[in-house]
Image (cartoon, rainbow, N blue to C red; front, side):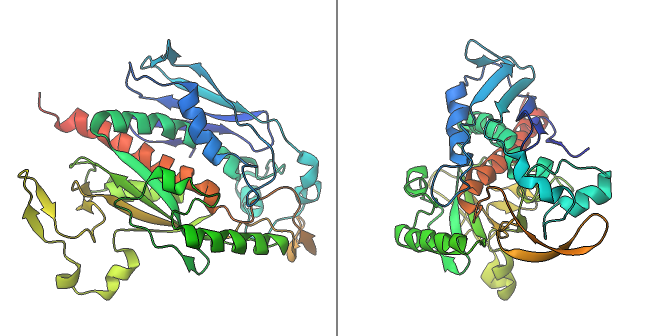
Length: 362
């Protein structure tokens, strides 16, 4: 029913934004992996609301509880259940939206599909659902790092027309976390923060682009034809709320080049490894990782719920005016960074286990 992701490393998320809690069931995690609640909590703290002046003021500690699958600090190989309880809920903020549809939100489509919806907040369509993904992503990152030293770093690349200058090959997590907008370009970050605050004061919202790099990726991840690794990454990140675009490597800019300009020529390095002199392919060729850095970008639209009055209709089809209430991010990008990292980690972890299962030497 669309709530489960992955093949060998499978995650199922549950919960609504103003319900009792949200969480995830992780199946297929290898046994004897050392993992603690603190490691998971670190990633959840990067995602949680109320963390700065440019995010939603909702105050949630997002404290995680591991209910099963971990014993004495190590995974058992059995399903891992992680729960985060909702504390700072205000369902009364959404009373008017029980009958009215917020423009560009999921209210109308959920009613059209199910004939019923949880109108308190975004319900299942809320970004609060991503808590389960980020918790699972923390475990996936641990698996990837332990196998090949693979690391995943995402950051805010652009807010509206403000674009940062960042080298994905050497950007660090410390640089990303050095400011509240999670942009490693310090000068651009200041302008981004000012822009988000300005838009927020107007009761409006703004979108942008998150860029992500996966380094030390082993060769061979991905399966033709329908399970190409970039196709699965695209599905993973595009399943995040508010996403509207995806590109990898040269992306759409590659359409402006000729084949001779775009092709990544091969060479053999000092260790005898086949490498590419450029990386316009973004680390993936023929749907399979080639050992170069996987570099991708995800476009996020402006937050749908805003405090400006807009035209809409109610459930009876009557036209009306609606002003959004509740607590919402004027820009989702800073909190989307760990979400993108987590989805990329889930895909690469799943493909790593599949590759090992099919192609490792017996």
